View 1: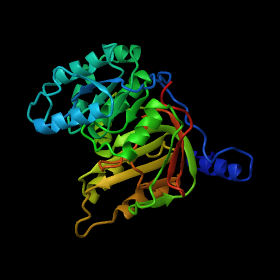
View 2: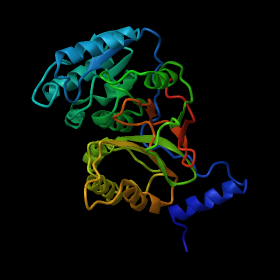
View 3: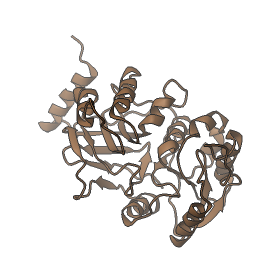
View 4: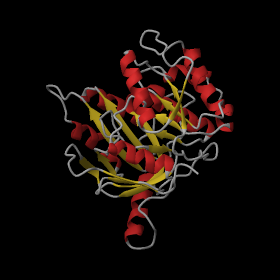
Length: 338
């Protein structure tokens, strides 16, 4: 009888426990372009601000964001269309794509910071020149709808991008410390859950290694079937979401299962599902994760500081990491910058 992938994982885990192997799971094997790391940020770096999805509607909120980033010591370069508004989009697709490409080609811009998420990044994926992005590597930073850009750029170019705060985020000490560790200091960061966080639980214990891939659950689900989804074989899948009913989370995880993604991964981390309504006659979030993830028999936990909430870590997308589900931690095995 042949050994299934999951049985192989269990066997390697037993071997590790007996000292025959190091680590419970093998490190993922990346297919596609070689991993490409950008230069680390310097103090006072120039950030290129773009709005690839939705706009910041209130001009006072926009100005407050600019003042905050300047107070943090950064120089700013604004995209030509960063203030545009086109319904729920920050301007026409071609203009939002043009701003992103311009920032990658501008030698004065050291990192590209998305001012917010919303919706719209999926729409511009076919308009980007991935060869130009690959030839001009620099950090791209953001979360939520920016998930589309993280996954597409990683898949098409190998460039490490950063799932982290957007321009309008709450730049508190927790968020800034993670940003500095990963983007400025280039550390192999350790991400753990603060002791005062109570909305956490372990799905399956154990440790797992693999490439960090993921982002917003709704956005990833909307990308399935496109040419922009990376290979998740052996990856650590991290996810978060906001404003979703439990049955919708169930439905989206079901789609990831049916698409084969959940059967490929080595480990699973869910950050927060912020303002996700349990409702009446509903399963709990724990029950949904127990069904979809618990049965995979891979290390998994819920409650990491990856979310739409005030405290938000910066995760380099595409680098190797290890999770320890029992301790609810993520540890980078390599820096995200050079």
